[in-house]
Image (cartoon, rainbow, N blue to C red; front, side, top):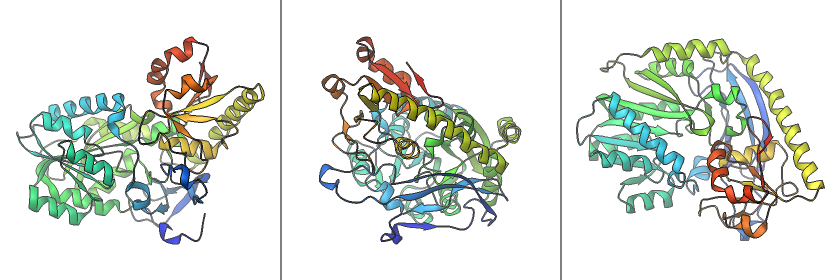
Length: 418
């Protein structure tokens, strides 16, 4: 890590869920730059600091987390991921919203607040159903474009103070959502207290996070990066929400990011009963061993086996003179490439569908990111699918590449060639 930039990073010494101090190292990954720190060609000579990527297990509440915290303004103010570029996510959000409003009778014209609303894709569906909507997002350009498109978005990090501003200007929210955001928050108690303040007495707080059970069982270690401070399972969340004066009433496993968890929360005296899904999830987690440090100590050897297999494959192909392109430049690719030791000697270039990433260079390793048309011009022999959670859609989209002899490599959850 570059010690010349201390203000951009600090290390906490307590669990961000329960405040406990009995924390044990569970998994150490290779230090990397922030996962979305893409650079322009003019910035290639500029050093990009590397930050520790170590997971710690709280022996008191059993929560798994990063203790090294990178300044969120560095991570999110110039964010380059937008939900609307992925049809899979658009479809997922539509089903998600239909499920929420089907389960919980929300009055017409009620306020819906989405924290970490990105380009407003999810809120646009709520708006189409006649709800009043407000987005909160710290990414300046994305928030501005969302507002221009008709989804009012406040460019800010969420906090209890901001919650009070929302109450004053908009009233209480019947639905609060936060998707792939709840893992990003260092001050989780403050965040949840802010939600509690602005949540209507009959309202629900619904959030989705990457599910630790899937991260473990499918070896999805590359979903571990600096934006994701917390690796959630149900059991620690129950006691945490209770501490905050809230109650988990339902949990559901969903498909994004290789496996996610949708959690629904209400005020402790709210109108809904707790579903059996909550109890079943805790029983399953204990059966798998998510509440044991030894489970995660063994996890490292599984990751090492995949690393050795992929390195061997790519080195063999390069020795044969093959050209290899990465497909997809998601945040998870930074963790995978750094921990697996993959650089420009293995990957000639990376393809990504997002115009925000095209023409830039990957974080730290500085591999060029090109538009999909480059596949035809550059003629790679193999596409290493770094956005493995979209592998079926990518392979379908690149049917012509495959038809003309191109091959796909999927690295996770096990290395395979298609």
